[in-house]
Image (cartoon, rainbow over all chains, first blue to last red; front, side, top):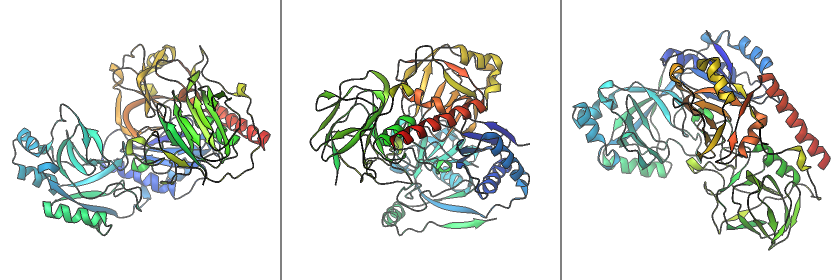
Length: 239
Length: 314
């Protein structure tokens, strides 16, 4: 079932399946836990994604064939690995206004009211399938198709960190200021990525995200607390 | 404290080391030197550790004034370096005094020069590295490329430095007709034997849309219709050759995003990344295939070469 393929002379992938599914993604997470805890000499980094795990290694310390033998024997029992409880991270969002300039457009395109968009967007729980692309960017699953919206015709040059957007059937948060073509519906005062903080990243693969609508006053208060490093992110556990 | 002052910045000059490893699962790019081999040689020549932070300069070099006495070395592209207006060689330890001025007359070969300073550049270590990651504006000097007027502090030199030299014929830039060696990638079979042969028999040029993130190549377009070129977003490595639907390959470089959605048709052998990093827009490139075992053998030999230089210099 697992496929092993080299990706250059310093990395290889373990491919679990050919589609996006929670089950396949969970096996990817199990592979990472299983391999990482063995602390194999020569492994230097991991890139887990939807349906595969990329393992980066130093060929001066371990060759591919020897590494593959070690990994194959390790992952035989991967399905038996019990993953730690995953976290539900509660993320406050100020929807609309200057924080989400495209909220009205998203409502119009889908023939729904602004309030309905907010309600649908903030009632789902979103699985963090993977992080990638830019530091702290989460690929989320679970958005309701009723609020799917095509990207902007012309991308914006500058979108502030924390902005929440929709692109086709995906939703996501811009972790750092960047250009982009997503429909912007709101903004969180939380910092997804802060290199001066421990841990540096708010989310990890396997977490779930629950959005909560907040007011302008909440936004200001939470921003201040985030700046003073007194804000406590609400996290609940799920098995 | 020893320092250097940037009098003019050149085209793109950044602080780089061997990169920020260990956070790719969070989407953090590795960054670091494009040509890690040249950075390591430059560090060797001034007695630094292999990972010490250097300046990576691109096509047009900076002008630097020294605010202390010390040693420097320049490796990689030949930009015709000068000290106080007089020509100095690459691949050699150069003594500098307070007030000395380092400048570059112009690019002769390659694309990127690495300037190592004894003691290394002392910028804050962010997540295990001093390298600049421009896109997220972190690391290096204030997370950006250097500007005129910047003052960079240097660390304390760890070794006493004699004059040192590395024979310059031991490494070189891509020669006319020389191919970049690649290993077939995770999605190579999607393109069939013909598709892969197309990659190996075509001549490509490095397009103007090429930077530290990746090189967009342009050449005869591959017919990718049958191959369904996109994949579910997945991990990418230094030197991964992506094949998008338009049939024009993209090679991912130091500032690559950790993940991407185009099929990975091949990967440049680690030992040839140094050649690749020294190409500039307009240069031509061809590929040849080697096995993974060959590539790892070459990689080990490259390490032995560096160790031999280190022993000779010790």
